[in-house]
Amino acid sequence: MRPGLAGIRKAAVQPRARRRAGPAGIGAVLVVALAAMTMTLAACDADSPTAEPAAEAGAKADRGAKAQVNSSADVNAKANAGAEAQANASPASGPMAASAMKVAAHETGQTRAQVYESVRQMSALGKQLFFDASLSGSGKLACASCHSPDHGFSPANSLSVQLGGNDMHRTGMRAAPTLKYLQSVPAFAEHYHESDDEGDESVDAGPTGGLTWDGRVDRGSDQARIPLLSSFEMGSTPAKVTAAVTAAPYADAFRAAFGEHIFDSDDATFKAVLQALETFEQTPELFYPYTSKYDAYLAGKAQLTKAELHGLQVFNDEKKGNCASCHISQRTMDGAPPQFSDFGLIAIGVPRNRALAVNRDPHFYDLGACGPERTDLKGRAEFCGIFRTPTLRNVALKKSFFHNGIYHSLDQVVRFYVQRDTNPEKFYPVSKGKVQKFDDLPQRYWANLNTEPPFDRKPGDKPALDEAEIKDLVAFLNTLTDGYKAGNKPGNGAAAN
Ligand code: HEC
Ligand code: HEC
Image (tube, rainbow, N blue to C red; front, side):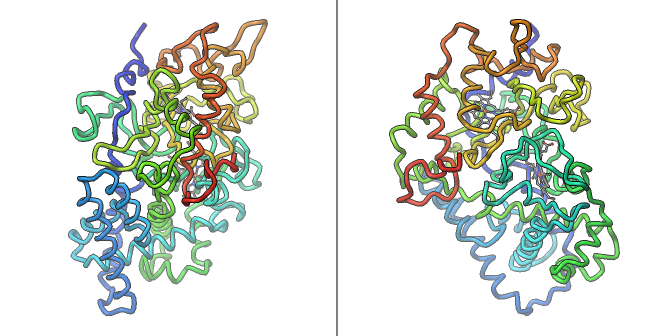
């Protein structure tokens, strides 16, 4: 058999540490965004009323960055310092933002305080935009409608795919993912090689990175364009967005941030909106706080229950769940907290979700990286059926799982992993006594399917996990929910599922 991508990724599925701040993802654009704002900022008076708090905040952000760098000797201290620096600092002052500020300040001749202030302004605007339904064609849909802050920025409801479009009755083909912990998603690469201090540079980890399930955009601003313009999501246009922002209560703040004449051009306004949204998505305390029970456990500040600990073992065990081979659970070599994803694009043969309108057409397939939403890899068979490995942080707050939202509980998801090959009839349709395995991926692409444990079995084999192990694994997944406070009942977040 031809060594497909599954083969390539084989070498890459050892639990290896990846650096927290990736080269692209949501973070890198901050520099560009800031550079674009130079004109406005140059006009900024040094003794404006905002200068002093901004300077203070800038210094805070700086301390945060230093805390990250200095404490590398002690792994525990390091993760704490990172989390604390992030928690203490004001919006967008995490490690990434801090280094972006350095670059921006250098390139534009601004003081750190000035740059910091512009980031703060942009984040605040981005937040208002994120919750503003008037940006949509229907006037009813905001980013937050599908990415609810109370649900780890994933949907509040349990629909497989969300409703949108001008009549609020249209649907797409994918479940809305969490927006948390996207800051370390690297830019999409067909052949991803880790840097030397991340792992083994010589290993080709296969297709990795990029935003959305198929990795088709690298930047938060490019991503935000998709739902705003999509006919089945927000269904808007640059002109409508500009009209909405011009009439919004934050119109003056928008002018203050982007220039008096920003509204003269729909395109310029639209771009500014995208930048502000992207900057907001980098707010550390909202989007990557690292405050789960598991983070507290890694820092030595909380104990896992017996069930959670056993679940973690099962999660890591290469012969059992083997989950950590893709959903990395260990700190990176330089001590940064794990992201619970290696960001690889992988085919695991999720069943066809027959409840989706698009799937009424028997010839329609969502093939992930090879299309139809993504177009640059069209016709490249080796990219068909692969989707980006999502983070499992806050996964217990989700109500629909996998790219097509087919499952609605973690228990179902885990069962799919451990029984897909031993009891395929539980997951795929059976026709004339024959199981239609991998019914959402045409057979010519089956070489792309992953065959590592727990996907290394056949009917009649013992499933990788027994009932008790499944239960404990789910208990462990519940420790990945942010907002844990010591003294909370064990398995914080368990109620959400
Ligand atoms: C109708 C529901 C809906 C709305 C409204 C919506 N999104 Fe999404 N969002 C999705 C879906 C579905 C995906 C996955 C898309 C895909 O894979 O093609 C997604 C993906 C994303 C991602 C990439 C996540 C990842 O894991 O790579 C980001 C970032 C994002 N949305 C931000 C936004 C922003 C910003 C807005 C507002 C401008 C917004 N979304 C509005 C449903 C929505
Ligand atoms: C070979 C890599 C790989 C392994 C091993 C793996 N996963 Fe995944 N995981 C993925 C990919 C890829 C997806 C998205 C698949 C899709 O939607 O098509 C995913 C999705 C998920 C989701 C859904 C998350 C969401 O936001 O919808 C959960 C939960 C999950 N995995 C848990 C686990 C558990 C538990 C294990 C171990 C039993 C495991 N995974 C093993 C790659 C892997």
